[in-house]
Length: 329
Image 1 (spheres, rainbow, N blue to C red):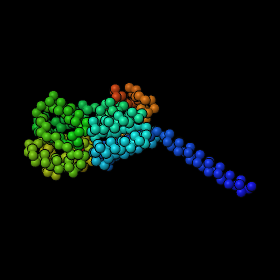
Image 2: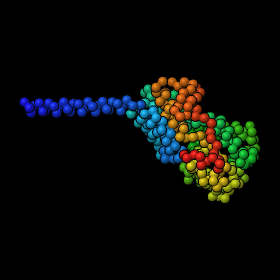
Image 3: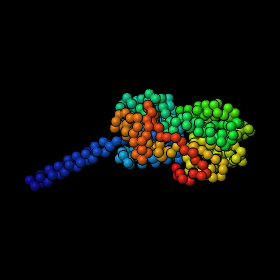
Image 4: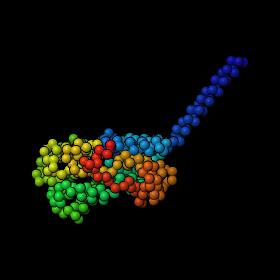
């Protein structure tokens, strides 16, 4: 009788353990999950975005899944997003390498009831709920051209080293750059646009080739966080610092040496830490409310404006020798 009672107690103990574990699993699964996908992992810019995203995730007590391809491969992005859809991640936020190629996958996520955001670069508007934009396209395009004009003057040949010829944000920036030149600096002439495929060694080689191919070149734009350091290195190593102007978009840490030695006078960027932070706050707000108001509070960033389906971080920052050491990203 005692033996039977002892066995019964063990059975009940097992039931209690299973029940407790089940409850614990349910608690974990009920925690909001947000998937944040960059164009690629392992570069300073997106590392800074991740840092801000993790900060927001801690503040909001949610689960952040940060994954992306190791190269700017849209096919790999689609494969990884399909995995997230299967896992039923609550909100997906992605920086597309190609706005059209990723749209079918994002639409599939929306049909499954998953809220979708794009950030850093947009996709087809009908394939996402909102786009978290780092700055307006016009502000970036105009700002780049104005900075170049300050450094090289208003006339002369310039070249652009971009990341990918299919990146939506970069193509729209270039549209605004051309508009600014036509309106304010008609003597500034774009002689070439070359992709670096988000490879700094390739950006360096492409920039060197441009310097050789265009002996009258007066300026080089590097409009991604990888292409600008590559372009700056090419200008410096070719002995053209101070003769060929260089500007564009990148992180302070990746360009500090070229600013300090005078190869680059001024360049632009928003704060990528804040961009990652804002994207997570927007994802949480979208999940909770189903739709974003015209303004919402995003933690330490305060009130953030929503214009139709675009969430705007703010105007780009200007980095120079005088202020670059104030930033660490």
